[in-house]
Image (cartoon, rainbow, N blue to C red; front, side, top):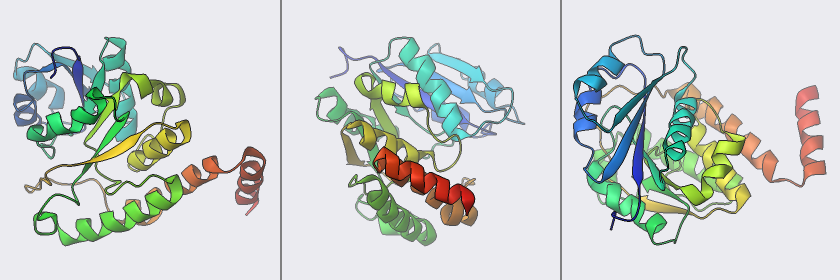
Length: 249
């Protein structure tokens, strides 16, 4: 299945020295290159990654903390610049199960989609595997994302994704939201470009790792990002009027 496709993995990482080693060791052999983007960690994230000794690993380090979205964009540019056909994003804390990689890549390789999104909420028994606040919060944010983007995505906040080279220009040219909230902006960019976005059920993995996402992101950041996404979908004269109204408010 993978012989004719170069698959790279991008890992955005900030202060993941404890978990990045096991994450790297779990990545299957069909992945050609691993691009770890150390987003100005205060710990030994880069050293712990290099200590794994995986010849596929490339470490890219930001001099200052730019955000998880910016780290992913750095990884995309490196991976597609090296000739990747498909690029998968996996977190540095082991929250993405590598057993789901083939299923996530399948729609891209079959030409059925341009961007595949992991969907934890549709995994059997997800309600028992996820913290209830996450389960309910993701449902609510996904409903808002569907409304803002017009894409029938079920788990908008899942960062386990696969992007095909044929659609990579959408993100490489325009960029996307640099920090938490980036998944919603990416979905909006894809929708605006007419790219095909699909959901793929993936395992919810929660093993006591600390999340950097709090109530402030859910209540303020993501709705703000979705507001920007919705404005981009309006006809340009209307969108400009709306932007001016927001600026003067």
